[in-house]
Structure formats: structure tokens, C-alpha cells
Image (cartoon, rainbow, N blue to C red; front, side, top):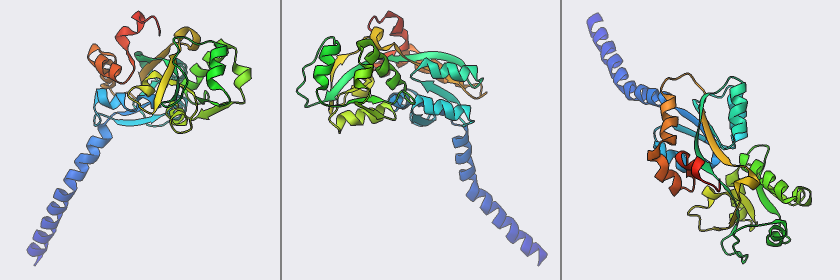
Length: 260
């Protein structure tokens, strides 16, 4: 009888092991995927370059993600649209091996069916003419670098005080883009947000001298030894075509691009 019970127990035990083995393997694979915290504007480009299953991606406003990392969020890599936040994490001892991986630029966009004409350049008077009685959509500078660049541009035009009560702020640049697409507002967004987007139209690009040069910098958060290779892949010449397809400037071209 004892032998029969032992046989039954061993049979059940090995059956349970076989049942759990795939689940344990899947959990191990998931656990070992790098977790990348990245700016919301990279939501399409990043998986296209690295592969959708290469990492676990967490997209959001750069400032919000940086604060989460500082508070102990389990990220492996952090990529920001503004060097201020990578510098902040560096000083906090939460980031290392930082490098620039791509660039972008600010543009003034309107709904695709807007009657406003395109302009090569823009001054304060022309900007106010385009705006008319409408509010201006920008990203919230407290959470999103796109808002910081937008505020810098408004300061360049001398319109910060004039427009302070006429701003419609999105939590991220993607939320701001929706205010242009669906809310009928002119907005200051990234050029990459308008690439292939039939719902919006770019009126004019904003010169880097007026808004600040948009640079995406990434760094390693955890102590995993293989993470710097992911950042290197993003900055490599092989990634250039994909960056351009999504409206970004590849890292290799940044120092040679006079408009950025």
C-alpha cells in the first residue's frame, strides 16, 4: 500500500512540475527583460528600433518618470527629452552612463483643415494672428520637456505674460497633440508627433535658437551589465533610418544640423 501511495504522489508531483515549468520560464523571461522608462514622444520609435518584445516599455512625461525613479521605481534605463532630468538623476546617484541618442524640434501645428497658411518663420505678430481668439496648446512644463521648450519659445517672442491665461496644457506632449487634433487648437508640439499624422498640419518649425535644442539623452539606472548596449544601439548609425521615419534627428547628425 505504501508503494502504491508513493507512486501516486510521485506521479502527481512530476505532473505538477511539468505544469508549472512553462509558467516559471515565462516569468523568468519577463523578469529579465530590461525595463525602459522613456519620454512619451518615443512611444512608436523606441519599440521600432529595439523591438517590441526586447524590453518592457513605460512611457510618460519625462519629469514624472524621473521622480518615480528617484523614489525607487524598478527601471533599468531612463530616456528623457530634456537633459535637466537626466542631470537631476545623475546628481541623485540614480543614473550613469548617460549619452545622447536622438534629437527633435518644436513646431507650431494646427488641425489639418485649418485655413492658416504655412510660414517659413514666425514673429510675435504673426503668432498672435495665427492664434486669433483661440487658446494655445502646450505641454505642462512641470511634467513634460516639450512644455519647457514651448515656454522658452514664448519667452523668445515676448508673449509669456500675454498668453499666460490662454494656455491649454496637456500632461505630456501626446496629450497636447490631442488638443490640436480634437480640440481645434494651435499647439506647440514635437515635429516627430506630426510625422505621418493626417489630423494635423505644421505651420512652421521653431528654430533651436528660439526654443532650445531638443535632445534625447538616456542613461542606465540599474547595475545590469548588458544595458549600455541598448543605448548604444539607439545611437548607432543603423538606427538612423528608423529615427528619421518617425520624424526624429539621429544622434550622428545632431552636430551637423544647423536648424537644431
